[in-house]
Image (tube, rainbow, N blue to C red):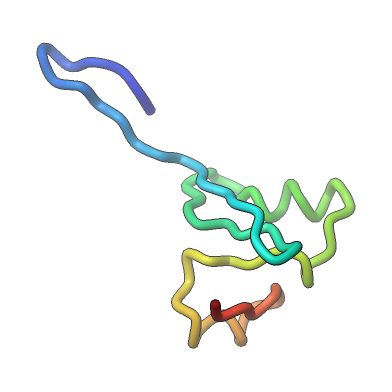
Amino acid sequence: LMGWHKDERIKSVMIHIRLKDDKIWIEEDWTEDGVATDLLQKGILREEIVLAFHPPHVRQYTEFAPQVA
């Protein structure tokens, strides 16, 4: 979401993804179905996706890569 409201700039990140240590780290995802779903549909393995918007101690309970660093 980007634009202007009167004299105020509006900017909000919907998706933030980075590549680190041969993994896809999803830092922010405010999409309806989740970008991880799209990546899985394209053939990316769960083990290659880190749901980095979850705290490190929670990631081990997801079906995705539990990277903590």
